[in-house]
Amino acid sequence: MNALIISGSRDLEGRTAQAMAALAEGLEAEGATCDTVFLPAVDLERCRQCDDDGWGECRAEGSCVIEDDFARLVAAIRAADMVAFATPVYYGDLSESIRAFLDRLRRICTHENGEHGIVGTPAVGICVAGGGGGGGPKCAVSLEGVLQTIGFDVADMVPARRQNLDLKLDVLRVTGRWLAQVADETDAQ
Ligand SMILES: Cc1cc2nc3c(=O)[nH]c(=O)nc-3n(C[C@H](O)[C@H](O)[C@H](O)COP(=O)(O)O)c2cc1C
Image (cartoon, rainbow, N blue to C red; front, side):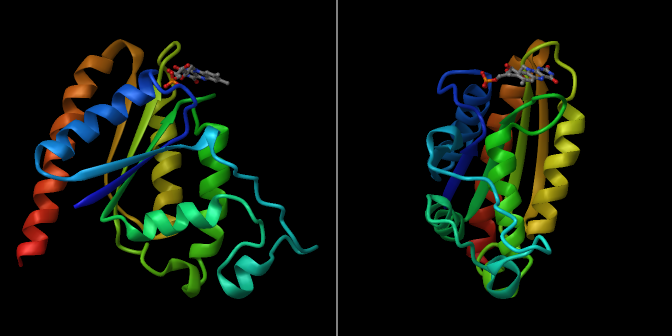
C-alpha cells in the first residue's frame, strides 16, 4: 500500500508534522510506504478564476491552465492508495496552502476528466490547533466537506489541539495501522 501525506504546514518538525509522522508510523508498521509533501515548499499558485464567469479550463476539460507543481501533485494523488491531508488550524480553518491546493483540486475533480483515479480513494484529515487549541473540529468539518466534494472516501477526521496532542498521536498511530490493514484485506478479496 502506498500512502501520500500532504501537509499545509511549513514547519517540518512542528505539531502538524508530528501528527503526520504518527500516522506514517502506524501505516509503515503494517507494511505501507509513505511519501510526504509540505505544500508551502511547493510551487503552487491559487486559482485564477480564469474567465469572467469565474470558470475556466477546469470546467470545460477537468484540467488547470496554471503551469506549476499542481499537475505533479495530482498525479501523485492518483498513484496513491490512500491520501492524508494534515493542516495546522488557522482561524478555526484550513491553512492557506492546503486551501489553495484543495480549491484547485475540487475544480478539476468536479469534471469527469479530472476525477479519474481520485473518486473513492480513502482519505484521512488531520487538523492540529497548536495555539489556544480552539477551532480543530470546525476545521475538520471544513476539510471533510471539500474532500467529499472532490470525491474522496473520507475514512476518518482527526482534530487535535496542543493540549491533547500526545493522546491524538496515539490515535493517529492506531489509525494508520487500521488503514493499512483495511487496504490489505481489500486487496486480498
Ligand atoms: C494565522 C494563524 C492562525 C491561527 N489560528 C489558530 C486557531 O484558530 N486555533 C489554534 O489553536 N491555533 C491557531 N494558530 C496556531 C497554529 O494552529 C499553530 O501554530 C499550529 O500548531 C502550527 O502547527 P505547525 O507547527 O504544525 O505548523 C494559528 C496560527 C496562525 C499562524
